[in-house]
View 1 (cartoon, one colour):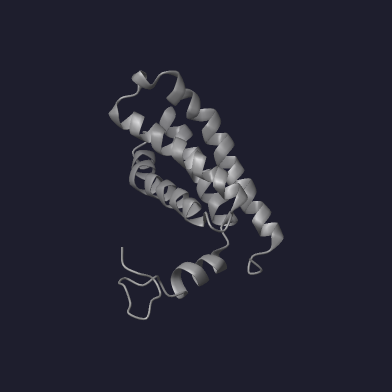
View 2 (cartoon, rainbow, N blue to C red):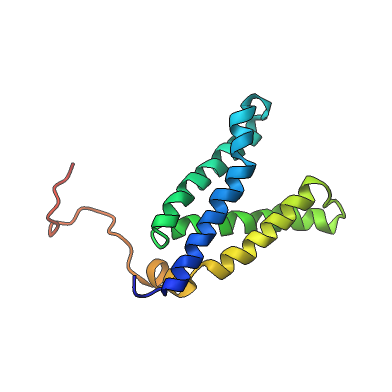
Length: 144
């Protein structure tokens, strides 16, 4: 825990809170109010985003343990901007809801990029050895 400053931990907590409040105000009323109004993929999206908001509550308490959630947010927003937003913007078709989504996702990219402690991410998820893939004879655990 000493690897990340207290200030950075509060920045992370604020970022998780932003997800909770932002998604809570936008998605939960849709999901709870009129789920029958959602087509198949809209319903899937609403459920996925509402789950992200619920998991972000855990991020407020455990900001470092929940970093994969912020990485997920960063990656899906970048994917949307690259795969959907940029082609529509280039074709001059970035209007209405697409324009709002563009703005929200670009802002999200900025916020998450600044909030994520990249040194910690590199140390923990890139350089640190991964978990073992098989049961080892030296392990004190017994097979299920």
